[in-house]
Length: 420
Image (cartoon, rainbow, N blue to C red; front, side, top):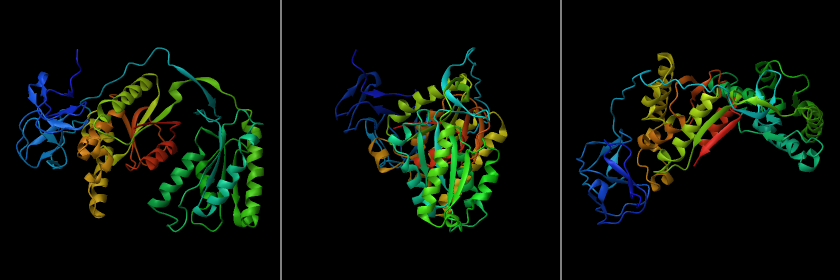
């Protein structure tokens, strides 16, 4: 049997998705539809006559409004479909679905940490407190090349974590709070056996408050280095190498042990999306999310500007009204932010997304939320906030993938799954 050249996702949908290039005059027999113009693969073809102003549905959800009359068989895209305001049915908690836990959770070989967390890797991290120490951080980590690490077979590597912040912003306030929350989240991450903080000395983001926020740590495995106290760059690099070497000796005693996958926290991200992402890679990752949760694990969905228009599908799965309203509040914050800065929520999709068949952020978001599977939403967290709930949760992050993944890792994710 020849595969259909289109996919209908729901009986109520106004558009079909082309699985191949559709040529004018093609008859799509199951739909009794004649193609009226060239439709690229992944793009949408009108399944019926659509009047100007009509809401247009895909996934049985609104993806935009027709800006002109669109005849059946015509290409539906940016030239005739745009954003519009409409009421969301938040239906808080109405679609809560409890997954049946498996009798015997799967296991993996991980690194048990003294605080009860489990790492999937065994690294030493060299973290900058400020942009001014980035060169020193990189130099220390680069010293430990594969040849030098051969003596420590149980250590996966020494990695540098520089960043462009830490000074030139207030010592208190939201900006500093987010930066410190992120750095502390990394310092407490179970994939790190040891951490060395490196600062310049005069920066706003001083190391001492960071260490206080990190709290108790395995003896000898949380170190600090201040460049000005050591007398400059060269001396600081030399001392940092000595400090990391000492931590490597201790980290080398760590060995993988069999542990339950319930210890895993997995960040869910997507990028390079096209018309197929919401029906292929993203729902597949959503199925994996549900599977991990049934084994006791945790997954994090993020990128708030890229769930706009689909947030009501998440609030319907919220375990409590409080959780639902936390998510709604974050959507409102982003709408206000884009308004204040002269932008709009629909400045996403990107050029590449549109070339692949996506038209509005509403359409993109409906595909993006598929990464979150079908299980109950058990928590909503701020950027880089420690993820304390189990199961499926949400973290407020930008739609910029590297920044989103950074927040998820700071929140505790040992693994990031990125569909593209």
